[in-house]
Image (cartoon, rainbow, N blue to C red; front, side):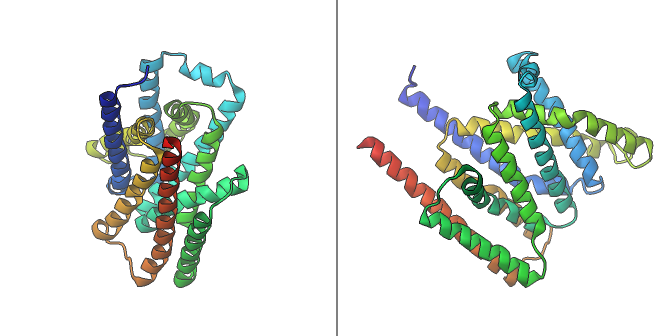
Length: 308
């Protein structure tokens, strides 16, 4: 049954609110992880995976019953793909939390500015997609920005590139993994659940932990548990939004997250953002403007063609 205009409009509004909330939450996460700086980054990531697995598994069991995991594991190829994607997202989380805890929020935000353009490059290399002239210009501008940052600072921005690459390849695998987003997230976290529990237990029994002994305090322990929710909730919200809002709108809104992260890094956490770094970011932002404008115009042309 086709939804009425009023219902469709309400669903679109809810989708837009979900998208705004999702990207805003992703944007403020550096402040949250920075508040956990007394906890070793690796342990933060392990807690993040454990509590996300618990929350998402409970959600899926409530919504779909107890057979959701067996349905995925009965397809070995799909389970293997989610195993690889789980390793990639765990690496991405680990590097991101480490970057935040060591004062590299600005460079981490750069990774998520680069990510959409890297997705385009991966599409060319692995999916045989063709770029428009505007997309080539956008990619070249981003490359100039990365090279500028490399030579002006004397070091390759490996944190940004590693974050962008790991998330881009994660997205590539998930593109071919025929599974709902939240179900895939649940399986990915369950794959690393037992290793994470074993590692945390080792840390606790060898004097390097602090969760069970309340060494870090009740508030910190509660934040570690809630970090799992902060991992799952935005992904659930994103899955809700993309079904109700056009991908063009979602694509434009996604730049909220790294923008907020950049502002937090500079104005809240006090990281430097001088003229040379601003110039490198400027090339990348120019590429993103070209990329976003090209996507918007292409979407408008498709709408006009459909209405003709």
